[in-house]
Length: 218
Image (cartoon, rainbow, N blue to C red; front, side):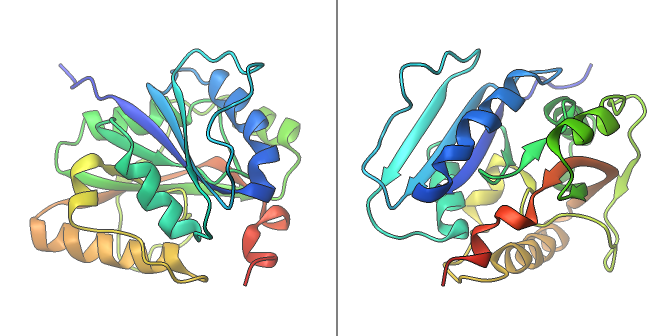
């Protein structure tokens, strides 16, 4: 029998991107399996809670920081305040396919030595078209195998990890490519620990590069 793993969606966000949070929460409301909680690390803001209009099927926490934090630092803070066994990262301006939580949850539950997970993505598609293209991707028909060094076609930023990983591997505060740096550290940690990273070939994440904060923040 597969292990029942609690999931937390961790969302790094800074104030100008908080406007995308409602769309993101709605996308997780539409999941085939809901996350157990969603934690937003919101920097450059004094807003510490969601407006009352948000009525969610799962708890949503907003961790507020007045100072400037970059994406990696916000990921660390969201992870620190999470309670899930599996931490699923999602940038505030991107969107998940409807089966993302269920696929990731089952991938970890069926592989006890998997400590990280990456997957494919689609870039800059309209959300309606993205949801239509990915609606048939389920745990039963998704393609997955251990990640191989040099593997292409996966996203570093929306990585998923077991909670215990954050005790050993953290994001740095660099502005660019902190997700690539983190993945390299995750890979080295897994190799040293006798664990591995799962690669899911299916594009279960919409990366909206045109909205990325890396285009505007220095």
